[in-house]
Length: 450
Image (cartoon, rainbow, N blue to C red):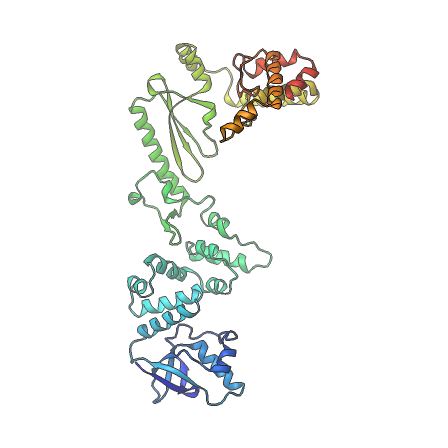
């Protein structure tokens, strides 16, 4: 390998050059130095069919900057060139890509065009990855841009479309891409992007393969592989749910065969609330809840009873509860919901008209806690034991403790409770405390609240 000074008029850009066929490159960053000092770093060239002429494999920007320097009056411009042996286009393209990537990272579409040309020249994904010190997955991600319509690729090159949107479009069919492109080019239309695009492509919430309980190898539907992530997605949600539901039913039957008293499936849109249930082992009638969400994910909650059932069981009335459970209710669940909601609306309206009663409801819930209300007590402790001790013995803490004991006495609570806000009522529940507060005058209730 040797370096020759070759005149500009004997040089042209090779079709094997990574940046060949594009508009003239921006050379504003290197033009001043080339006008002043010329080209220092040599270009890579190879002989072409015209004797004494060469084509540039790598160095297109330096070549165009030199052309501009010549147009501005710089005489006798020659370029230092390393002449490569005559070889195939794939080798020349590899040289061009390595040179360009070291100098100025090409956009992903340009990389795709170059990788595609290498593949057509017989290079495998493994060969390309080894040549450019990439992983095979990185090469496949670039090649995945070939799944896009040309107009989408050009919009991505022009930065009209972000990378996240392009990532999801590589999963789309050609028909879906055309439909999205029509929205994108419609001034009055809205083309979904990012995560919204994924939902648009998959008809709602996209379902990842990791959610499947069934064997993916036996699944007959289409799975779209996401080369930009570690997951695949089910192309048809209905096919997924058919297979997923069958597997859920199979596991339900297995639980029942294993001796569980009952197995309930919590459908998508309804949530299994742990605070409404208590743990109970299989031998005490605990059941299994299979919680399904809209993304296809399934959670198995083993050994639970509702709090009402657990309370009855604790009172020794489990047999009576079983008997009553077998009796058909006098009203339907829909009617029960109707009655409960209208009752709630009536109570809320009455409370809005009676601020004193509403105040006592609020105080009762603040003290006892509920699924809709919670108060946390500030911990008056420090990592430094001396600081903690000084707080506990301070005048302010002593005064607060005196008021706390007074409030506990008014509420008929244990005077040794560490806080008024217990998170529970030790005897009669929130309704019992509410009844006690109704007996107290407003001034005392305000003292409790304070």
